[in-house]
Length: 408
Image (cartoon, rainbow, N blue to C red; front, side):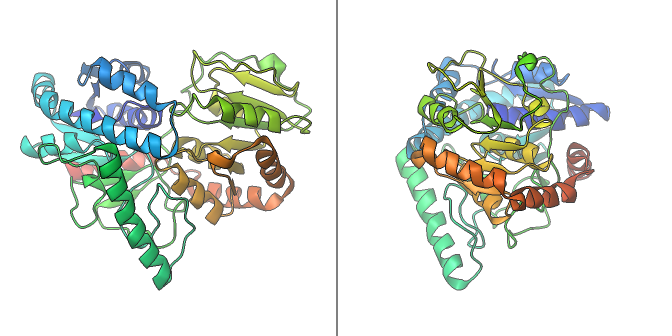
């Protein structure tokens, strides 16, 4: 079978879906990533094919621009980008699929246009949740809001209103709209399931208790490739083995928020630990004279550093959060936008860390919460309990099994 993979062209989506694709390829399938030049290195690193689609400067530069934004501004711009991408996918995907002789698609939950193309071509497809699994339901808070979990009547009412508010704001503020029968959130509707199956790299333990689990939806475990960052350069000789290591990263999307990086660096001053601060891009820089115990790296080998870390400061992207929990590490979450507030709320609800809105993240507040995370063993104990629940589960293999059974 020849599978085509379609996902937003961001590290947080391309890394997991190409890891899943590599597992399908290992089983003898042909796998091709459909996307722009931004996605080509990810395909090649995973040993997969690549075919050009949506390869235009407007979309590519848009993802770069998104790195400078946070909060509602980022949410608005995300919707605009998704709309442009939907239009381009509807126009280009049928021809690319025919040219490549694709038999089935694996479609990111945030790539609904590819799902509609598959349906119109009578092509089987599965939906992959590379970010947090998003379902519009009153049982859990909407992911863009940092609300705590409540299971009572008032909590469900709050969530119902919040879902409607988020959908309205997203549509109105972003200009996201129905594009030839496609809406950005159509793969999040529980009452209208799409595709042969929906698989998520989220473990079942990393969610609120009452999240709906319809028969077509499957939790698995992280889709992470162990050797992903083996070639990333880093000054290993500067690490101080005598002190605990705190790894800090705001991911690879919102990686131009220099004032937040500066606050993290200043928060580390006088801390009895060494901090590695990754700026998330090979070309990033920070005009700052950091404290002696802070190493600033444009782009860091995250998985290798997590093996040495004691705690993590993160934007609460799903990949970094799961990679942190997979090592039983506590974290301080500084959610920026999109699904990150919802992920941070899950971390706090499960006891594995603290959370602080990036809009109020001063050096003093970061330090106060980081001290709390480092001093209390309860956060690490909670992280280790979560670790134990999905350690040993091969997430890509479980997801590939489900896809093969559902799609063929």
